[in-house]
Length: 143
Image (cartoon, rainbow, N blue to C red):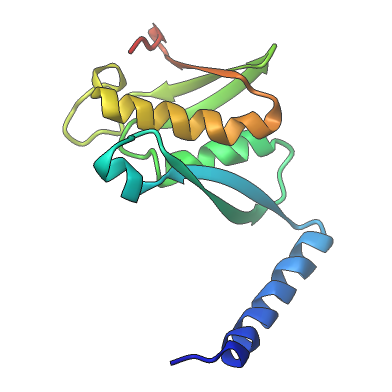
């Protein structure tokens, strides 16, 4: 069993590395929202929890946030291409080739759609986004 002093001994150097990386401006901390799987299993597919990710510094934290979500959390739904934000609306361009079973992003179940939209919207609200739209090369994706 680890004692509090052992935990502090392990966590302090890690915290120091994170602080130095951020202070040197080589990395930034992103706040992401991912599905709260425990709640999703029983009641709400759109329930989220907050996580923090350390990523290389970028000119577009919105783009970095969406890339991080599609790299793991949303990887089975689509492949992220780009985003534009205008008047609080994020238009996210995706390609439909991510699903190995050949489903398209427009054919997600209601639970999958709720998961996709809640994770994206909750993450992007910190950047002033109040609405999201998903688009493919063929046009806007309707659910």
